[in-house]
Length: 178
Ligand SMILES: [Zn+2]
Image (cartoon, rainbow, N blue to C red):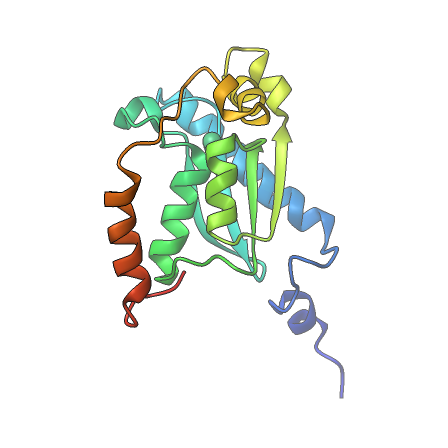
């Protein structure tokens, strides 16, 4: 007789492209912020936590572990992406949203594109983080320059030999596309 509204409200059909419920977004963001706080309090790294959500459910999470693991790539978003991909056994996070305490740096943004994450929510901005000495803003400025004007030179070398493995890979019909 009665319509079960709880099923509707809890159904996981809500796509990340839709507006969603802001209280849900805030809930996931608070979780990301809490992870960042926990990690930085423990001395693992900076105050960066991240959560990956698909269809209203957390499928991966992480916090910055750069200091703890002596890994400059162990940003919260990277750790969360690895956690989510391991969990769903896929290299694609299509249909997922990422919540991060701080706006992604260029490395994490690249990983977000590679992983096909569809939407990003962030707490504090790159400018906010730059204010206490994180390099993100500098890297963004570098990327906006032509390669020859950047601080780190990129030098072409042995293109012909390198092209051999690229062509062999392209010719392999069994390769997995991603
Ligand atoms: Zn990052």
